[in-house]
Length: 78
Image (cartoon, rainbow, N blue to C red; front, top):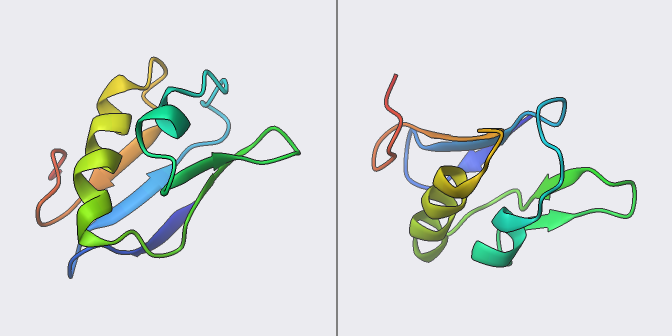
């Protein structure tokens, strides 16, 4: 699942098949990530510029590497 731009070309996404709901992302960036009542990780549609650093930190903390931040300003420019 892929969600909106942080900056032009920057995307935050989560692989819910890989995610095991450890919750580190929600603790690191609660304005960006939320574990839903269905047990799946949710991402706000728009991550503000202030949230980009927290989203990157949350992606780095994820033990299953289920979160990706790609594009301009991201840590994973593949």
